[in-house]
Image 1: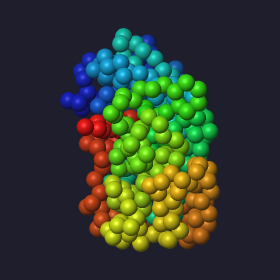
Image 2: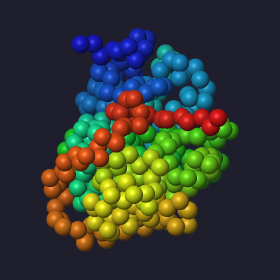
Image 3: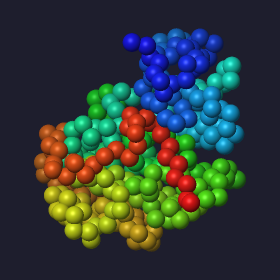
Length: 315
């Protein structure tokens, strides 16, 4: 079967980097870019290559956002953030080369397997928070924290953050690429202040996304309109320990002053909660999908795309 599909323009290249990167099958297709599994002929390693589609390259704002993602990720070197190896342009094709993770993203995992055990979820979130603490210390706010942008390695033991396409650099001269009236991010995981003004959000908005993702992973329900006082949501959260319910409540508080103040502070609380839970093993059997799984649908049409950006226009 050809690696091409109706959603991938036929003019996409078969190799890049003057033949260094041999592009194989498409492993992710978004509105503006395609992620290919590729072979690095120089390093003799499998990689992931993200290529901007031709119509995206013709849009100055989209091209700027694509290049900004590559530039931002190339500055971040952490075990829980996907690494960037190369950035380039060849015959009009903008691309960047990333490490390849083949364990799938967390949204796909939950859709396939159902909710996870609380202990496993907390271990995963601890890794995510370590990556966020590093990014925030470097002056980068992700702004699109959600399970789609958290990717397992092949063992499904290590999780890494990806898709910094709408990240905001806090230090220095902030590059403004968010147009007035646009909301960038994914509504179900978006902090209230980000919905109000996506151009001026801080690290605590990312922590809201971590809390909303935790809610999804441990309940199997989408966190859209997340409200812990809602009867249906309370029933779902009653399946998990009280200490974990409190953690989700703190992370997803409507007022920023009522949330955790830093990723490190939230990671410390995750560690504390873990110490109170049994069994202590990380890889206890996954919890089967519950009846609430019927309420869970992945936000976007293509769930395996780690480069996905949802653009919600405020009419």
